[in-house]
Picture: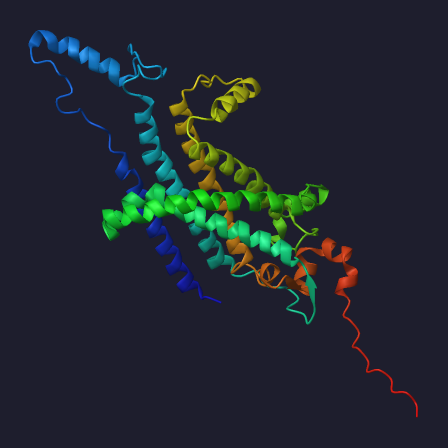
Length: 365
C-alpha cells in the first residue's frame, strides 16, 4: 500500500492538473470584438443607417429572400454566438473542474482510507459472480465508452491542449479520424447499453434493502458492510445512470449525426414547460436544435464520465477482490459474504466446497 506522503504528492499533482486544465478551457472563448470595416458606409450621412442595418443583422433580424428555404432570410444566426461562448466558456470550464474534482476526491479518499480490504481475509473458495456473456457485455460497454470519452474530450479540449504540443496539422488529422471513430463506436455503445439493460434490469429494481444500505453508507463509516443482493444500492445507482444517461447520449448523438432531421429538444422543452411550469422556447429552428443537442450531449457525457471514473476506482484499486468479478468471473467467498451476503445466501449450493472425487473401485478378483 502507498504511504501517506506519496499519496499526498499524487493529490497535489492532480490538483495542479485541474487548475491548468480549467485555466485553458476559457482560452477559446474570447469575446468577439468589432469587425474591422463592419460598417460599410463611406459618408457621414450613410454611416448611421449602415450601422443600424448591421445591428439588425447581428441581432438575427429577418430579411426578404427569393430562396425557398425559410431560413434564407436570416443572414446571421445570432444564437450561434451565445452557443459558442457557452460551449467554449462555462461548459468547458465546468467540465474540466468536474473531471478534475472527482480525481481529487478519489485521491483524497485513497490517501485517508486506503484500499477497502476483505475483513476476514481471502478464503480458499470462490463463487461464480458473472458468466462469460455478462462479462463480455460489460467490457463492450466499458471499452466503447472509454473510446467515446477520449475522442469526445479531444473535441472539447483538444484545440487548447494538443495544438501547442503536436501542431495544427497533426491535430487536424487526429481529430478527423477521432470523429469517425466516435461516430461508429457510438453504435457499439448503444448496443451494449441495451444488452446490459436486458441482462441486469431485474437485479437493479430498488427495494427496502437498498434504503438500509444507503442509511449505513454502504459500511463506509464502519460497522461492517450492510446486507445486499447481487447489486447493492450504489451499484444500482450506477446502473440506472448508465442506462438513462447512455440512452440519452445515443439519442442526442444520433441527432448530431443527422442534423436538421429531429426536434427532440423542442419536444423536451414542451414537456418540461407542462410538468414544471417553465417558459422554455419550443419554436426552435433546426440550427438551434443542433446547438442545444450539442450542449446536452457534452453535459451528459461529462456527468457520466465522473460516475464511471468513480466506478473504475472502486472496481480496481479501491477495493480488494472486486476486479475478479469482471476478469475471471469468480470472486472470493469471504468478499462475497461481506459485500453481497443476501446474494450468497440465494446461491448457498455454489458456496459449498465440492467433495474430492474418489478413485473408482477396482473389481474384485
